[in-house]
Image 1 (tube, helix red, strand yellow):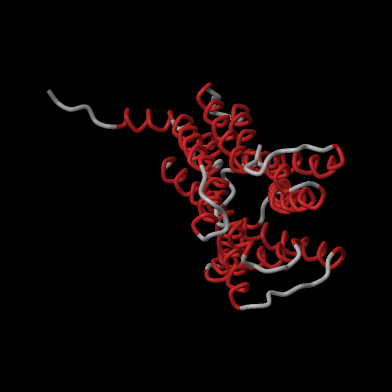
Image 2 (image 1 turned 135 degrees about the horizontal axis):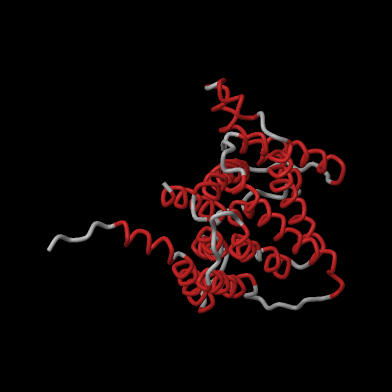
Length: 296
């Protein structure tokens, strides 16, 4: 059960790996408009299940703290992320924002039934180093003029790690409620768009396909998979494995001609993969212990 849930959680990381590629192909829609459209699309599968199975509508009746946590996590993360990118260079802002996997691994020690070990931290730090090689491939130059952007990026990291850790405490809450989180996030993003941005729609069919792809996968199904994974899987392994997202994203960009192969990618692959394997020691040990002994 736990292995299966962890695997499902990892599919969210795989889907997030397509975020940069699909965003690059989505045209010039401003961020809040793109967020509003994508989260609206992302809510459709979950809402469809509720329509086909009306009895599950009762699952949306949850305490206020569940709704506040979900909406703050999805909307808050994207609001802070977009703010960071608007007020600081993307390289530095992205590096700071991607502290959230490390925060999840370290913060998991505070969860009931979890225990933080040295290899969890070592695996997460190895992944952070790999991410540094990817995100900082053009150099890092922190500047005090971008303090607002850097601050937003730090809050971004704490927001998503906090959401993921708090979600684990709501393991009895059905993943169906994520559809509601996505819908409310879409509405809030729409209000931000109407108040802050000019409307720009995709100009080609390819751009529309990219937008729909974003809504169905990294800004849609990924959140359902992540919710199920952190509630029922190994959150420490998922936290460390999350560093695979920027690595895979870079590999996909390279594959489609948006980036050039380099030694950085190869070394980052070694660090991220090795860090994930190191952090997964508990799972490997449980699997080994579960194997029946060979009769003599």
